[in-house]
Image 1 (cartoon, rainbow, N blue to C red):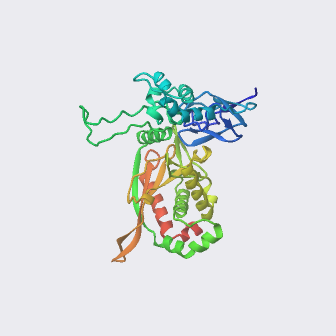
Image 2: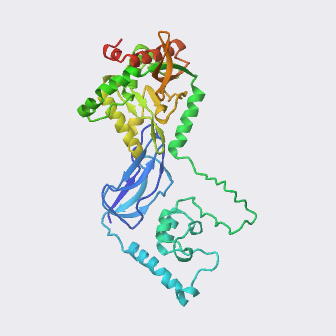
Length: 406
């Protein structure tokens, strides 16, 4: 027998532990090398755990929902074993179960009232998961729990109570509730947002920007840009460039607090808030001052796609000196974004809408966007925050400033 251990992948220094999601294989089943066996959820990303070698999954040590540490053994693979016919035999037994149960002999061996019947394979799987067979809804004949039912069962799950044919003291008023535990990512988001509000002296300043110049520039070069660079020219790259333009002028907005020290960062790593199925994540654009508009658009598009698939790495979500949150993609007109610690400021951008504004004494219609800069008032004074936001506004209303750095 040659055994290969399946281990929890390395986690970053900022991640202490992780949670197992759902095993894709069960003991006795064949696995291929590099086949994904289970996913591990940290407070930042979901990591896939591949099989280190081909063979048979001989043992699962940590079940679904377990809390694990980096390097911990999750399961073992026997690289010399052959998959048994147990699974096929169990499936055949389950298929034959209805006929057996219909026979007089089966009737005499039927479980007593209140006892749930389950196939041998289902019992084995439920025992490994620590799930009571009585808590699993059976899809087989007369409520028999099949192997498929057992594989779908989750630790802590319970069979829903049968709905009574008529009210018997229970109010069925059509007001359902569902209680589910927070994912590790969602719990960490909640923890960090609360921490940010408690530890930072957050203040928000607002301004509005006329987006006409950016819209005209984008319209003029959109097709040529996409043909040349293979990526769509969006608006976010202009906001990123405008933010870096302002951070260079006012370095305190790009700084952070470390104890009683202020750390001035000589680089510009911009976090871009991205929505994912498991919650908000903030991948980092590194050294943005050295990136072209096309490179920024390519990285943002890549972040967005991989966030939906849960493929972002821990390294891509670590660090950052400043963040941008775009509530406008969901239709938000105004918000007060919360700082992403240990950063000291965050820019909130919103939906661009045509609004009446006064220019040279006349009311005209312009595509306007409200900008919001939340900042840590412990180290950033109102003057620097307001001037930084004005610098962003000026760069967006006259994009040539970004070329001339004025």
